[in-house]
Image 1 (spheres, one colour):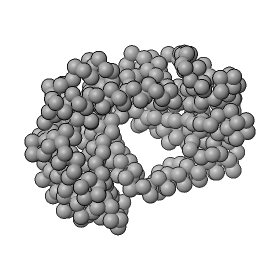
Image 2 (image 1 turned 45 degrees about the vertical axis):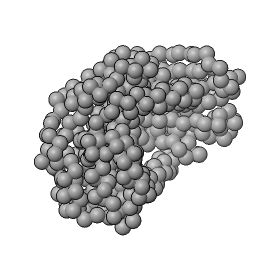
Image 3 (image 1 turned 90 degrees about the vertical axis):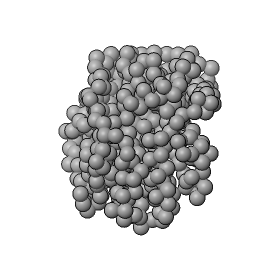
Length: 409
């Protein structure tokens, strides 16, 4: 298929390919798999992330050192990450090494052997990763907040897992999870670089075509029955850390783009966000205050995080709720709305300048929607948002009685 912005193709086994051509000497290639920590059974908690770590530990034709050196030895980078719903393997390299990158990513996905000795060593690495999170309350609080909001559901569990579970994992555990969750119709290979598309398809057919076709049977249990909760935890910290939030729209919801704009107005990355002005600029109460919106396949999460001196905690929290109320009760003026739209449009446009981020973004969009909207379409959707849309979404997502709160003090 040919598009003015992207080129796409589907391999015989169902793996989809999307490519964006650039004139940069640097290319990015990634495999996005629609399987993450929420797809684990209770006794598999942490397994998706463990696989992401272990996939580089050797294949049928390469030892661990050779896997790591294959791309990095020519100045490139090899990386991976796990989320609640995705596992991603990706590489950055000079355009002339497209064949090397495709071969390597295919090799580690199809032919990793997961040597038990290497697995035991990697468990120690993840134990240290878990310890580093426990030493960072500003990061740990986000995981614990999701455990509160999504209590009793697989999406609640943190990605890293537990020491107890990790100790049990072995090669058989890995193969079983991959067999149950890595489906070819739920994989996208995403590419951004200077490469003839027909040649790229041939490379990827050679590297990934031997993977047997396998389609997913619907298996994810939908999250339902959210109950707001407030919790305080005593921590030996200099600051109080607070997170407050609510469930939000899923990734397919027609109001999702409105939620993105609302979140950006409230606590996006710009210094002129409402929360940054209220807590930091006007009162000096917080060094870091931010809001976030994550859209999952069947639900979503909105939250606000800030850290402040313990004596300022209640005042800061009341200011956050004051901003919520203003957005629930007061329509934005035409000039305010126009500025907010321009700000979000500019941020999105600038983000596409990072070709690595672009590769990951178009891959995820193609995975979930089987299409990627060109920027002009995205911008038109933002421009179409009305003050009434924002008010409706604010009243759905920012209601005080629907908020859960977690405080470390």
